[in-house]
Length: 349
Image (cartoon, rainbow, N blue to C red):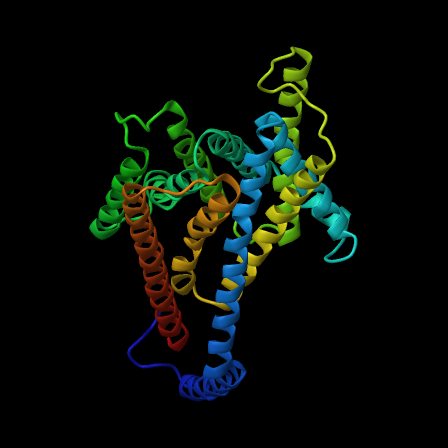
């Protein structure tokens, strides 16, 4: 119990504590990167994020190309199968080895991978029938869905400004899919289903943060997708269910499936490296470069260009998503500062 008159010897101990605190603070300050280094790291993070966002739509483009010849179920399975294979091979050369990443597989990691597998199945089905930019733009409603799920299931406090951003994003989605118009179809809902599953995936990612290595996460995710989609592919083939029955890939189709697994793994790695070098608030706008990359890819490969009204919806979705990301980053910094201040007060007493 603290008293108004500290016992003898406390002042010496406190003096020693403050001296040591000053030494630790000076050491920490000297070990912190300089302003020039921070700016250099931020630029590296931004360029890394640009590379990731320019690369990921290529995977979706391959899925759209392959969907003309192979079932979507088989394409999704191929993406996760090759991701698992490449992660296992990578563990033999980097990290703690294959045995270690296998030991990191858990039921929660598998559940996390399950949501991503279902999200991929929905999204690859969407790009088969919808223009690629429209599908990706609608999918980017997932930060808003994640905000709602975090409030409902994690009990996170969401202020009125973030709810306004959620509403803005949903209005943007309605503009893109335009229910009741001639451009709307049941396929327009597939990116929303994919975004919801992906938001659940991110929700579990928050819960499992720091529980496994990056390579272990890649392996667990790929393994979950392979084990979930593989049996479905076998059953569809056995029952001769045409939308999901296996068709032997030919020539370049094998190469595209392999590239999808490689892009998935490398793209995720680049995103993680970007966030290691630059703050989330700086990278949030770059995340939406994926829509632009998808538009360019779609224009040259599929001759698809979003209409003016679709660009309006994309702008609203982007604005809402960027605001939510930056607001969450600001709230996280405030909470961290409050915790550090409380810890400092506790140490001084």
